[in-house]
Image (cartoon, one colour):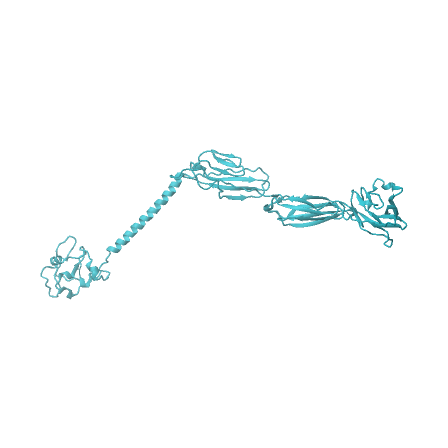
Length: 489
């Protein structure tokens, strides 16, 4: 289809009545294509068409291309006989077709109509050449690396178009910058390039950009999709370990999308699955590392497996597939050497070592409890039996004196044996003590000797011996005799 190929009435001599010509003011021709130069004639009933023709205006003058005469027929100039023809020659239509349009065909063309009795009527149109651009998308020079620097992703190109093509990028999810470059050539031909600049990210992998080109020579809007290919280190995921594996368990497996290294005996790799063909053992505990490598980098994931003792009352069941919490890492681009996939690290856990730890913990707790019990017993016993001594001068009330044990207090009949039955006093008012041998009591061998007040014994005033009551005296195991009225501890 030709843009602007619509017929418009443009009479050369508006003063002439009775005949009208409909000629488009401009016709765009695609280089190498065919075009039609339209010329429709309207005549009044009193007019007769004698001849219609097409002329081309050149710097040297007018050149006739084709002539139509209702009586004598069609005549084509030898230079255009192979390229020019009337589409539907008649008194109402003088349109011609020009084939294989080239740049020399650019110019002004005039349609002339001769009528009787009014004479000639003419109208002109301008032919321009459109060059259909070559539309394509060129990928950027550098590959798109995840988290890389800003780079040219792709270029939307409208190559060698006349006139200049309209070029732009469209995208709903990728937001970058565009840069337009133009290169003009001879005959008004222009190459337009629209670059899309963006900082790659792995999240845009598989998203699409759209190159959009509009040009008069094109049948319509051209839209070319471009899918982003962002390179990034592989993702690793290991599933199957649920932190509840027991010794003797069957049907255990680890699923991972990569090939790992050396495995324990009885453990095989089936495609992307690590299968334990036997019952689990304590020696299977450890760290299983799986690595994946591509041209961008290497990623790995560690899965920590601990094979426990089975519960004594629980039946061992097969493991359920559940994602394990593992530690993953991604390294940079690999060096130029062959990468070795790492094998799992098996750190065995010994039953004896585990028992030692548990036994030590239990023993420590029991020893601490024993120390607390012994300390509490000693503390309670000390507070219950300690009464002090008479050197401390600490007073005990009557209630405490009544609680004295029979080991510390002599009964009245024992005092009679100690002091004698007379109860009489000496000249100075003191009573004589009779020495009496006892199991653990030693009495003073000098009954007539007065007690010194400097020997550390409690002081006994003279009036305490005149009461005549033997029950007012208390004898201690150390040999001292203290009155109840003056008892200090």
